[in-house]
Structure formats: structure tokens, C-alpha cells
Image 1 (cartoon, rainbow, N blue to C red):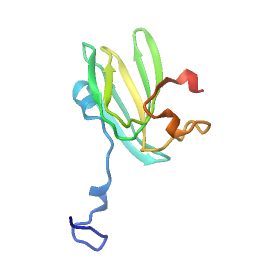
Image 2 (cartoon, rainbow, N blue to C red):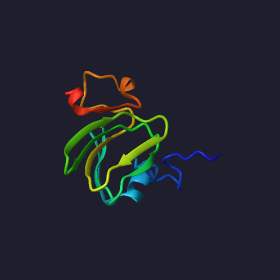
Image 3 (tube, rainbow, N blue to C red):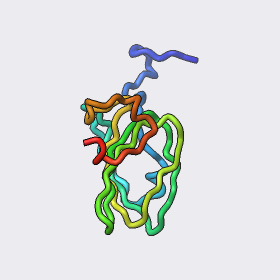
Length: 130
């Protein structure tokens, strides 16, 4: 394997910058939008809408955590999705609007009293954390 350095003509810092995204959510939802921040431990903000039927999609293990708000006719839910180290399924509920904050791998800028490793793989109602 060839090693690239800053002096190498193949080195491009922008190409090495990894964008964290859950492609199955993008494909199985409507009106998917995102805005990259990559500051303060935040990768990006995103929003999407569920289709006319519930769908379960693979949630890829990438070490990122999320705060996710879901709004539909039943009201608002808010949850913390801990860092993923194993692929699991995420259910996109029909006729639901979502807004999320995706954190960079290993980052936990919102809950200083919690250790990131204690949140791995957990989905927790935000009411329990605040």
C-alpha cells in the first residue's frame, strides 16, 4: 500500500475528510436534508420525513451518536442514540418528521456527566438524560 503525505501529489485533505451518513435512512425517507458543521463535536444536522408506511432500515455501525427528535400526530419524541459499534435496525415511522444532531465519533458535547462508553449501543429517551 502506498502512503500519502502532504507532499504527495495524491494527498487531498478534503478527500480524506470522512462524512458520516446513514445511507439507508437517506434512501428510505423523504425530504432528506443535512448541513455539515464539523465543529464543537458535531458532524452535522439533518432532517427527513417518513414515507407513508413504517420501514425498518439498517443503521450502520460508525461510532457516531445522535440526538433525534421525531414529530407526528401523536406528539414529539426525543431520544439519544448512543454510538454504534454493531449494525442494528432503525424504524422510520410513517408520516413522521425527524430532526437530528449527529456527533463525531467518540464525542459527547451535550452530556458532560455521562461517559461515552456507557452510552454505546443504547437508545435513551432524552427525558431520562436531562
